[in-house]
Image 1: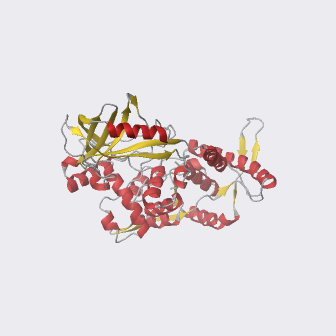
Image 2: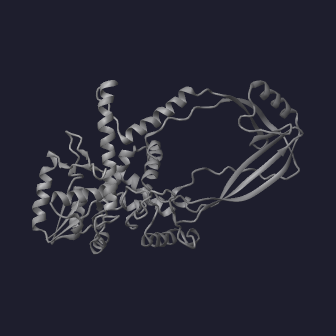
Image 3: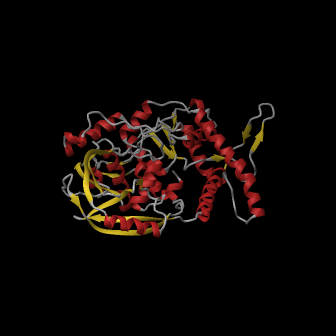
Length: 462
């Protein structure tokens, strides 16, 4: 018998269905060892100067550790199959120690999707536990303990009972407080615009008055605004310039964790926590026409990498559904500039292109289908052609004033064929350079600058 140890029961069930007899799959249900709750649990090695953690199995984890140990005694091979991130690597290391096994001797398998093919490939490509990742996690955990263990009692005694502090939460609190202070200290500044419509319902922006460029904050008060209004009403305008340029709207990159949370918040109204809960279920396994399977790749990632096989597959789908003109000559490659990005991971994408949102509607819950559609369509969109627009610009010139009117027309929808266009076309009428132009309405409008917005839950996580 071979034993595979994962983190979640749902994942264990899905993998067990793929492997059948000869394999046992058990879930650790997260961390099974940690720093003790009742004491600091960290000592200083005086010779090396290193901090040394002391780990223990919590009482609530004793039963699962006992079960893992019992299965391990019967197993020919024990595979560590926890998540491929710092926490997952450390959980695997702790599991090995809890079983009293040498972590270096246990095969470590990783997969970015829970499909039969991916699990088979992982078993054929086992590696050892990554001590660099494990040490990074231990350092973070000890920092959490050092900061929280020392700061929380101080906050509770000096400010309010029950208050706590921590490495991440205290830094985040500072961001929130700094933003709130910005808002409280903000003093609104008055400014005016001259909202002007030329005949044929052409909205235009004032860009020059008496030789001076006009920006958002140029017109400071009502007196200036009324003087400009009078000047505009007395002016005679001609169409001095008509310009048309082609512009592109670039395809969006595939999702990583932060952008999925942000987009799900703005488009679906999901909290980041809700988004990750739904994504977890889609990753660990849901019902499909071919049985239970994970339908998206691992959802905790800061990578924009995509597997070549997946990219080739979606390119075939794009050509089949939309035709060759929607398919770029070469696959699109996205990279993240952050030094800390874990590029061994993949971006978040569907694992089975045949499991379209239309098919998925018969198998997924309402919120699951909403998030799955977002992921599926973003993956398709990221490998399609850019959308193209015809950008229009008309300049109206008078003796003292100059206006610009802008419009645009979609000439090729590209990836919008999947995602839909964000903005509607704003078309300008056909006009001739040199023709006279008359204003239809000229209206001064008062405005005030606004303070920075408070952080939303999604924004503060980015």
